[in-house]
Amino acid sequence: MRPTSTVEPQGNGDRDQGNGDRDPDRPGPQPLAPYVQRLAQRVRAFDRRRPLVWDLLLTGFYVILASTDYTSDGWRTVAPDPGVPEPLVIAMSLGLSLPLLWRRRHPLAVLAFMSAVGVVNSASGAMLQAALLQLIVLFGIALRLPLKTLGTAGAMMTLPLVVGAVRFPEDSWDAQVIPYLWASSLVALFGIAVRSRQDYTGALVERAQRLEVERDQQARLATAAERTRIAREMHDIIGHNLSVITGLADGGSYAAAKSPERAAQALQAIGTTSRQALSELRRLLDVLSDDVPATAELAPQPALSDLDQLIDGVRAAGLPVRSTVRGNPEPVPAGRQLAVYRVIQEALTNTLKHGGPDATATVDVAYAPDGVTVDVTDTGAPGTRAEGTGSGRGLTGMRERTSLYDGTLEAGPLPRPPGGWRVHLHLPLPSSIPKDSQTP
Image 1 (cartoon, one colour):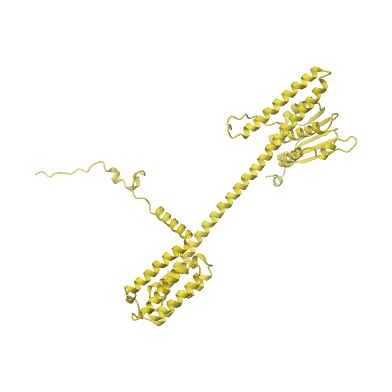
Image 2 (tube, helix red, strand yellow):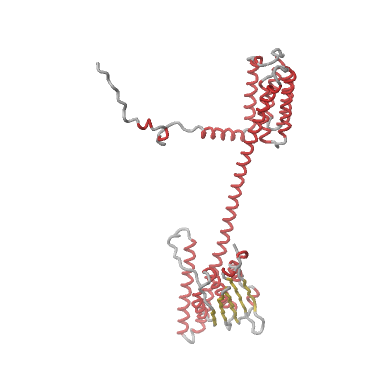
């Protein structure tokens, strides 16, 4: 018969490619580490909730283990003296295992007691393996107590070894002592490593909590600052326009009987001013709204180029204003331009409110390489302003805007005669401020 030949199938390429090309969606063996980690977390959580139950379980396990060593006569196979009385063996088995129940509350006392039992164990020649349970207490001492106590613990654990080496010098003393000392050292180092890990983890948790608290504090501070800014902007917008409307209404009512045309002009100016105020207020509220952030109507903030419009509106309200501008405002940044505009606006608004019917105002703006200087004076009576009939928010807002740009602001009455009120502002330009004195 002709020998038959076999042909390897060509569809096993995926099998020959190795495990590195395995489909992640295909079921297969999963890493063991996550399961072990979850199990350890559950054990630690149970230990925190029921420490006494855990101690009873652990102690009971080792008591049974020590008793099994006695009942099976396993200890006789390694004991230098197999003829040790059985009651003494039972007592030493319990003395080396039962104290584990109190190992966390009184670790040094438990180790001292177990060391004393260990001395009897070594001197009698039983050499029970339950003496190794002292390593569990040593681990707890390295994990929880000050590191200086490890010296005392090491001395207590070495004493039974020395007694056994002297009592039964069958082998060299280093063969009996050194391996146990190495094991004790490794257990102590393991406890220190776990302790360092716990301290590091606790420090990270504490830092995260502290950062969370600081984040909440920063959020609250930012919210308070934003509320202050919003209140300042609304005060500047509404307060100024309402003062202009009030002046126009008073003038219109006075001119209604004698000059209807002037009254109609005043009403028209009131409508224009109120619509402007309503538009600015709606724009501010639209920006603050969370419902329509993308459709909010945005417009540039007032700048120094809008001073003429501001002064014209104040004049239309009945306050004669003479303005003087020297220099070029172009080098002034937009933020400083807004601050200057709002200070002038607030000063003229205060004159409208408190200056009286015969008051006049003067606005003097000077631009220089080192900054902007503004003087707003009026001839109104300063008494009402000095007495603080208003809320005081206007002067506070002016000072806040000035301090934001490291400027200086002076506001107060002028000496009599002629009297009046003066607001003096100086804002330095960024190029003229030393770097070590700039506000962060």
